[in-house]
Length: 408
Image 1 (cartoon, rainbow, N blue to C red):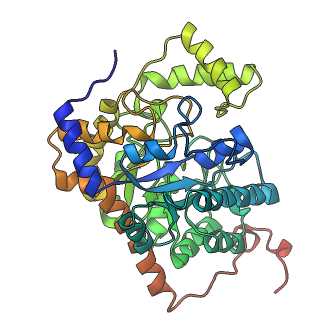
Image 2: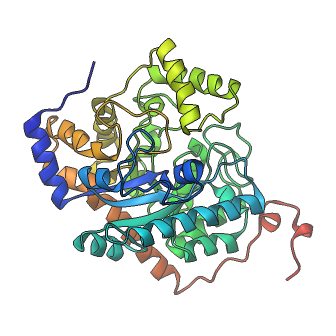
Image 3: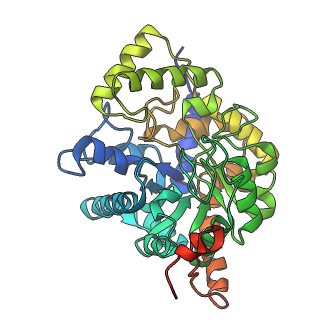
């Protein structure tokens, strides 16, 4: 069954996005460019149609009504220490190269004012988010270095624990945040870097919300009550966002939004690994394996309506002021029907219009909430700069093995 959208609602959706474009919280294009082309932007030119290879190119970003994009500077968590840090630098370099090559369409943004100015000038504001605390190798100086290079959020973990925080998809070790983990959150607040709680365990979510002086985000997570996957957000955590001021950005990954897709995806991932591929591999060779598996084992298909079900529930629990969108395009092998790539956002907006979401509420979902949270983090950082110095804490001093810490 193919997802269909009401033409009148779609026309209204496109008009709304012309004035209130999408701020998307998470797109893995930089890692896809590393995998497909070794960062050679001439070999993989997003000014050309990349349908069939990537979820993202410039024309489809425009068609989708995207006004600002957080590009993930993700590196896999099997990279650790200096290898993780250097790979993150390469990812940052890729985003900067994209902005330089496609300057008529993209503009680097560091602040909420930059985001608004880029859109007013007809450009798509390009921000960066680091996906996983392994990217800082338990170093607050490295965290500050990422911020200086333009990273404006950090997801505290990826799929595996870090020494100071538990992941949603690993065995509990710290039962949330360690003392050093709490210091990471405080230092992010001091800098003005958003604390991203996608991928982390519920205990880590609750600890971060307790410690943070600034609004947090979930850059790409959906509702656990609607789809019981550990990557999603429990209702008790969603209910805390009104007090914190943060934003949960619904994601489109089928296994996170459709319960029937969880077991299917696990089996497909196991098949990929058995054939010698990483389960997150989306290169043409890996996707051919996935297509073969799908042909023999029909895939449960999510749609834009499935994602809208999550937003309906999340609005009831968290409130409209605390919702956003984080599609995770180019970070997933499969996408929902109606949300095949970055051109699909109008379909989701049209679906919500058909559910009697007001245009004012949709303007908050697509643009207003994300820009507000970014500005709020900046305001908190400005206030904290009057009373706090950069932290020189180390994980050894706060979490043990203090004798191993460098002398000061």
